[in-house]
Length: 426
Image (tube, rainbow, N blue to C red):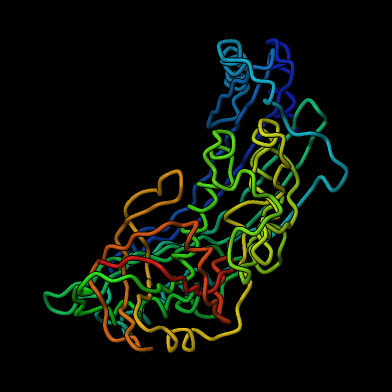
């Protein structure tokens, strides 16, 4: 891999690049696919890829290819430089800087465990027995990845990583009654003794069965909504996209662009990037070629860091982020989920996702709450059909009234259940 990287960098320099960076990747995937409870596919695939970046006269060009063929690498290098020559100059363009610290990183397993197939088969039998009303597809794969990031600044960072990827889409059916589809996904460093417990899959299936017989929520109201961790993760992605990342800050549309060091959420909100936390599948190198570090994003409601790439930091004169979504956690609260529900007069528990597209630049959204339950007088009374909700993601985190003690870990993020007020349900 080092030789391939050297050839690519030299080819870009020979073509006229002032600066050059390359990411070389070798990937091996062993995957199992299950459809309606039956194993449909088991295979192992291999792939090599390269991503090249050239900067010339403050103009940037990129190229990618799916092989390590030397002539193809050289052609891709020339293409990257040609694209740079045809681009627009921007002094913010740069490549990763050389930093002190480790250059080689390793995490996870070298190969899938022998128990992968029997555990998957046992999980299928368990779902058939315990959840006869569930229809589902299930994907599990072991991904072994070797990656090298190198550039003309002397950066040379290599990462070897082995992790499991799991995803499932499911619904419940009883006669002619069918629930909305729900899904769960995540990553694992090693397999548990029982796959149905991984990523709280059993709890999701139980919840799906409870959705049978859902009815409309009823008349429009403004109340409190409890967001399950999976839905909270999507809200955090939207929050970051609207207010904390390159596009929003460079474009000047972020309502938080001048709020660094100020209170931007409820005081009980603590969110941090945790790429090096041993409780998740770790990420050692950023997409633009820097070592990662754990860092606070919001601490007791105070904005501690934006989520800027090197380019975004150069463009805005703000600090580059050393971690990012999806490797995040939100601190647990001081109440159980049952206690939070018992204190809710009227609202929703959103057990799935909110469909309807991205929020507007100011964070306003309107979408359909999937897999949800009505809460009345401190009790979950019934499942509700796909229900429209509207609000603003900025307000959701400014109006957090409770955070659960319980949290879920999907291998990339560790998040609690969060209750927020002032949301319209219709």
